Amino acid sequence: MIAGAALMLSGLVVADSSYEFGLSETVSNPQRATVTDWLLEQQRKTPVAESSELPAQLYVDSQRRIGDTFKSSIPESLQERANSLKQNN
Image (tube, rainbow, N blue to C red):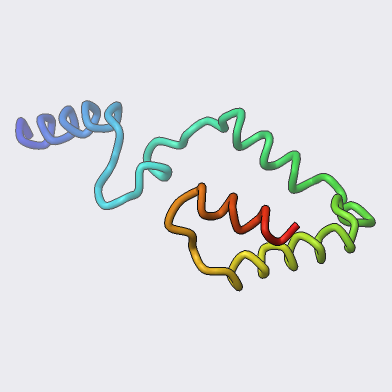
């Protein structure tokens, strides 16, 4: 009887503490939503824009310029690069 009472009393003490027996932190101690979570949720709920923010031609031109940078060798110095640009103009 004393052992049973002690077992019940220890059960009450444990009931007030958090349980983390193999559970992730979010299951045992749920986290409150942050401002970032709220902003991301708002972004998810916002309808998709009909058109892109960038015009298609601007995107194509940007990609072409990026591709052109890989065609030339890496200059040894900035001065060398500046001189090569002057010669091309």
